[in-house]
Each structure stands twice: as C-alpha cells, then as structure tokens.
Length: 128
Image (cartoon, one colour):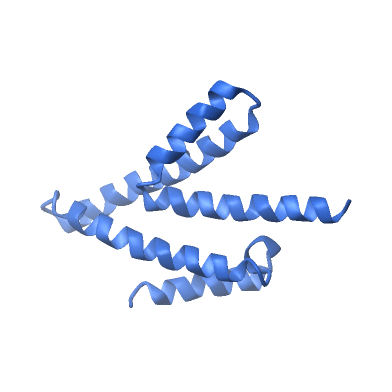
C-alpha cells in the first residue's frame, strides 16, 4: 500500500509531461502495469537482502546503490549493444539480458527504454 502513493505520483508526472511513449492510450496501461509489477518484484527481493546488514540505514544505502548500479548500467549497456550490427555482440546482449532479468531495476529501466523505442518506431512508420 505504501508503494501505491509514489506510483500514482510517478504516473501523474508522466501525464503532466505528456510523453506519447508513456501516456498515449495504448501505452498508459503498460506503464501502470510496469510500475505495479516493479513494486511487486522489488519488495520480496529487498526484504531478505536487508537481513544481511545489522544497521538498517547501511542496508538501505548499500542495496539502493547496488540496485541503481545494476539497473542503470545494465539498461544502458544492453541498449548500446543493440545498436551494433554484429552477431557476436547480439548473442552476448541476449545472454546479458537473460541474466539481468532477475533484477527488478533492470526490468523497469529496460521496460521504459523499450516503450520509448517502440513509440519512436511507430512514429517513424506512421510518417511514411
């Protein structure tokens, strides 16, 4: 229940900026589901990991840093590898994506990137 409030705020921010990739009629339900599933996935992952630490504030800082590092770097790395037209890099990228799927931050980042990429492709094809 605590996650629903920031989730609604994030959706309202997306609505205020009116980015078609995220708030167009076919994409808004996908954004809402992506945010809800992210919250549903991160809680069972973070709760057991917090018991590794004896100080709660240390657990919060370390786990947040690890998740941000994996989420941002993993999303950007796989996106950049998609830009290369090499079969070896493409196979490596597929493996990296499969491995990183266990991290909710990566899934959220890749979901947002894929939504923007799909909207860009749809806009490109509509203009022809």
